[in-house]
Length: 132
Image (cartoon, rainbow, N blue to C red; front, side, top):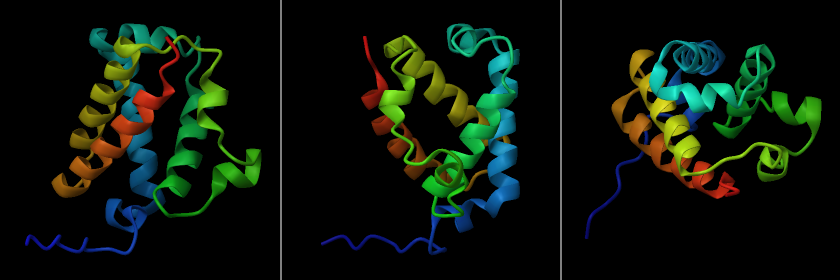
């Protein structure tokens, strides 16, 4: 029987390094989306400005990772699938989002064990968001 190792922190939010690290992750994610041609379709889905998306993802991730519920305080329940229905999300967009987030996690130095766990959770959520 294999015993799963307990994470070094009570929440992923603490493990990642709190709000400062979540903000760095989100900023790197959207910077990469602007810079890397491999994320072109994903970038096009976000309109001309990324500032609103940056703020909303930061607020959401803080709470989703076990930190302050900034998003819910501002907007109520995230209702992710409903809020993303206006956008065409297929396998290509899902995979670009996941690759961009994985690259951002690597670039900002997210612990490898946490990065792996988050990658699995991000995949489940991103796959569920597909609407075509």
